[in-house]
Image 1 (cartoon, one colour):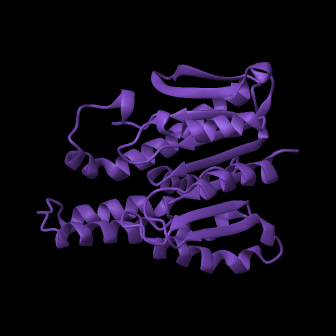
Image 2: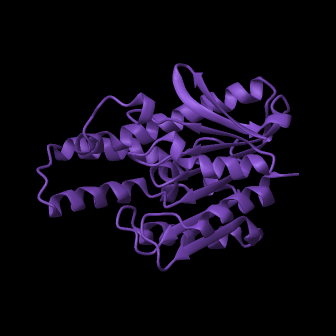
Length: 257
């Protein structure tokens, strides 16, 4: 039987999903991050299928979302996007440390995944954490600097009055570059990485993700099975059933001994 527990770590709510018979065992461990304006409960179908395969899964709640919401209108939340991404990356290590120290997660079998903003978090975390042994980006992208420029262009084209000075934008870019995997692809170190992205995605541009995939392919020449890209010609900003199944199969293949 798969159990879903609501828990707190450092006062931050998250869901813990595991097979009841394996609850006290050291298990392969996956952290799955939700998207922008979403919440932890929205990815329970991923967690359930992964727990069935023998993984311990946690679904964190990002700041300003779900139970951590501050009542901000969605339009106001956008100005906090990168703050949310970076804070989430930092909080990932808390979950990893807790479960490894409790003897409930195998530190050699840790996976990281996420949808949309959660995929962006996943790819940024790969610049910081060698403990991530395999990763899946669903509608995410690694090019933080390029994406910030794209966001600003989109806002300007919509007639949004930007309250940022050029100095503030440059300061933000300078800070984000340390998490930008497209600027430091060597940090992947050939770790297993799966991308899924809809070609009609209007929120996270497909071309930014696919361009990165093309640039790193040659780095995986000795380990081609560790890199895969699924581009869905019909999909926009919603992961298909194929993407869900591919996520589970990827972690099965690369994390289970």
